[in-house]
Amino acid sequence: GDSEESAFKRRKLEAEGGDAPAAGDDGGTSKNAVGTAACLRTREKILAVERDYTHYFALDVGGEEGADQYVYQHFNTLCMVGIAPSSNAFAGGRKVTKVDFDVGRGGDKQEQKPSGKKKLGATFLTETSRLCDLVCDDGTRIKVRCGIQGHLLEMNSRLKLLPDLINTKASSEGFIAIIQPKREIENDVRKHCNLLAADEYRVKRPRPLNPQEM
Image (cartoon, rainbow, N blue to C red; front, side, top):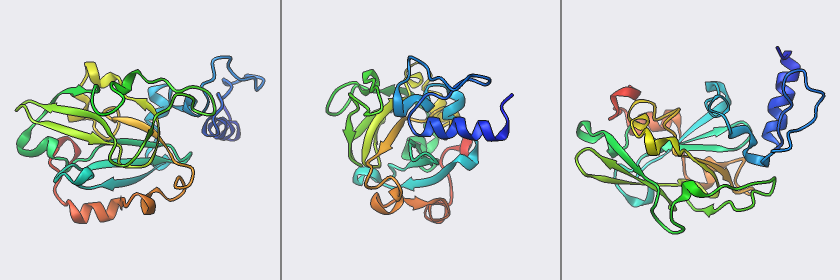
């Protein structure tokens, strides 16, 4: 397996937008490199260990009461956006039964495939840009917004077939999108996007509505 040093170098290369060589490789990069999004192509890389992320939260996103979301920022500055345990999507025991990606300006965002180090084709979003709608078992539709300013690198297309991941694994496999923060704010998204740190969030929302996150 990789030594600790070579493993660190591989992660650093991925964070900088290149493909990491496989263990034992001579350092060559894949012909299919997709730049900044390269480190997000597999579930293992997306679902990194807890220490790799700083947890932030946005409450009442878009001015809608209970529209609570998380923004987990990886050490490489990329952000994983998803549904917070206090979201009104879970109010009264609701469950998400469908994820509708064909919403907002630009249509179905899961079809967008940015490529290259310059993220060609990536859509720029603001905090209130709409990513998708969650349809709950009681018919309620919950709008999910970006929460930060940046380029959309990936939508979690698995949710189209497996919407229950939001009910059971919202903070990991049930994430909504991967965003590359705008360069000017990537080192302090909390300040620029008015996010709450994890301890501040727990004070504001002491009781999760999603029993899977309790």
